Length: 410
Image (cartoon, rainbow, N blue to C red):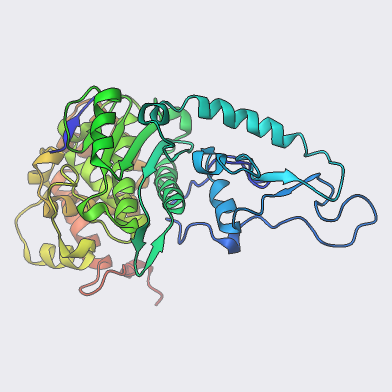
């Protein structure tokens, strides 16, 4: 049972050491070899070493271009730090010259990595290397086996970087929508997934002071999430969607002030946002906001535009007055899908309202009063606008949004 509380590597020299994504649209794909930083120039040069482009160092060949690109997105990675050739720096000395202006980057970076590794209490406690990575907003442990990704299988190290890519993509979109910087958060979000439930239980007792053996999520102050690979979380897509969904809950609970609004009258916003960012990045939402691991529910395969369009077309009874007072944990999955759609409407038509809504909900104000004040309209009028937008933009079949009539070319 879920416990719910309220409370790098160098970037090939030129890339920044941390994620820089901050955009409205979700990334179409994670980094690949095609997007990796080009290697040193091989053009003829009369001065210096052509192999290293006069830098004195070259990229470590033990890692693919794809992995170099992934490592450029994070601050530190324990798996790459174990490389015997580059010691986690992703660079090695050029064998064809006596060094260059970038040669000092290797010992400098290694010193940073050593300090970071010395703070790894989890590996010390479990008595084995625990794969973990640090990004701008997250401390992630992805301790999983080789898992399926469609018909193929993914290396656990690559899975960890895919997860890191996703949660930082979510943070980037939230930052863009809410006008945030890293300084607007009080903590880094800690998210862990374990292959062995015994490790999860031991870590819960040692670090979270909890005797629970179920999945754990602490929101608000110092957010943390811990789960193990079971049921829907035993594949790469399942783990990625799980982390993206819960990363959103954690981020929004920790900004402005350390209050989770999901159990204080802000469930419509809390649930709607978590589903929205999961949907935006993974093109569907299949997680239930409270009991993800113990309630295997399904609502139209996680693609909701057509079902919601049809439901609102034939349902005359008002929706928002019923949803606005509800806490996240009291909602059914179809209720949460409606909240996703309402959040979808706000993002599409009035994204500047997102931060004022969140601020007011953090002050523990009722959702109805918040919406009427922020929009300057009655809730029923807002519902009429939302329903009209759904009818105009959601398809009756499939999940591809339609262009609103007022924006179609005549």
